[in-house]
Length: 70
Image 1 (cartoon, rainbow, N blue to C red):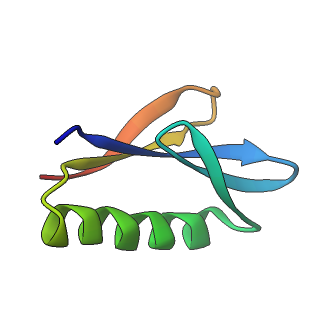
Image 2: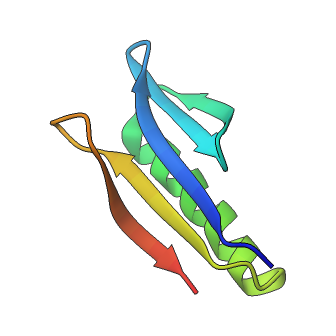
């Protein structure tokens, strides 16, 4: 099965969670977005055996790897 990627990017004063290229959810705070991304990634890796990575936009606007669930 293919890997999965969740991305957190700044959007309209908050954070958008992008799920494999598709916008999913919007959060006011980055920590909220990160918590949900971790739950999704952990579930995919643990229950469906889909390796999932979480990338987040840094202060320079670049995506960087922040977590990986094998």
